[in-house]
Image (tube, rainbow, N blue to C red; front, side, top):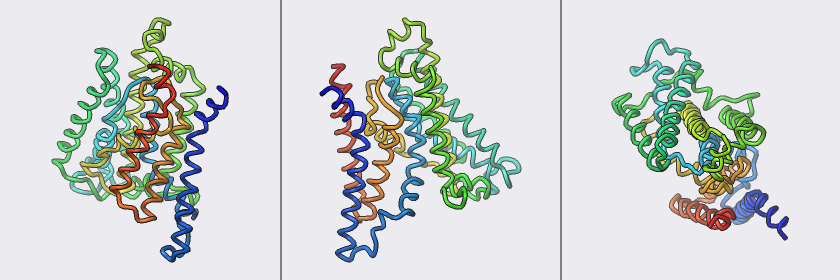
Length: 331
């Protein structure tokens, strides 16, 4: 019985994803039979690639958020850090009036600058949270306001456009004329992060900190270092997501990334990571991301209004938290 429950908890997210795909596919087939669709667009290869491309940015954010939430933390600033990194990087990759230096073909300098900004924001979050034992919710909410303010100040509230073609390749290019670059970036980050979390000592320390921080500290593990590293990693991934989003849209907007942190948290929670820490997997997050992506895509294709999409997404989050087995075990 125990093994069956364990298997259900482990594979439940995959079953839920498959069930969702089947439901939307059936709904699409009904639309075809009634003449609303000429073909079942949901089942096409092009649509599958569209879904992966759409979820890549939220996926990159959710990977970083998974590390943070496993340590019993949260980072509400990722959307704002995304915008800040994206708009500063864009100024080094534009030929417009807001350009900094010779940016006709720049790509590596904007990337390094964006990653540096994300790392700094994450490092500040982790240091303050760890050193002063403050609530991550409050600290990262403060960083959210600071990053948003700096984003507006950096360009006086103006968007940055006229990005060079090399930079835009990050968001619109293809590898082998078939695979979108954002999807490749997302999968590479996922694989690298999975190895860190599952095959390296650092990953075990991350789980230990979230499971019982006091015992972890007593055992000699540097909890301060682990937390700072996790939040720094989350900031770096937010910056990379900002680069991809800016390159994909062809301009950096000051309001970019608004509420993205909520979608990232939703993907992590739906994927089975416990908000109280110590429990969670990147594979679960991966399928949580896909569930949100497939849900949004399927409802869009079926003509369901965005209001109902938000309602359904909210219900999914609440149900996921209610079904969290670790929540009952620690009460």
